[in-house]
Image: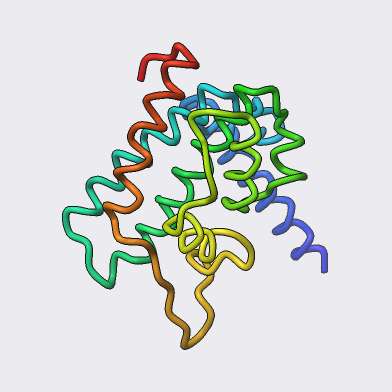
Length: 178
């Protein structure tokens, strides 16, 4: 019993030492990983950067679009559209708490809220967004595909082409250079 206790203490000391070394030698990302609750909330500009980055990723995924690319495309496209819409909502006074509690990951609800805020989001949610939303929102089919079920996505150009002018309009409103 005593030996086990000592072994446990030695392991704990070793773990503490290892973690301290990682933090001392690591970059700021390692420091933030240790204090995830201290990270700042997303902002209008951070969401815009995420949307732009995902948009660039979609263009790359679209160059070799086939059945094995449906899940990665759906994940990146959904995240791109979510960040874009939430950026627009933040530009119009929404808070992070409102985004989480009222919308979650529901792209259709975010689109409808965006329409209420005005341009550049307008009209009924497009069909490509509804298809994308089916895999993006709960139960998160793109991330956790049920056994023996497939997923579908809109065609790449159906997502990439309409997002491009929306991103540019949000960038101009934000005054942020990407």
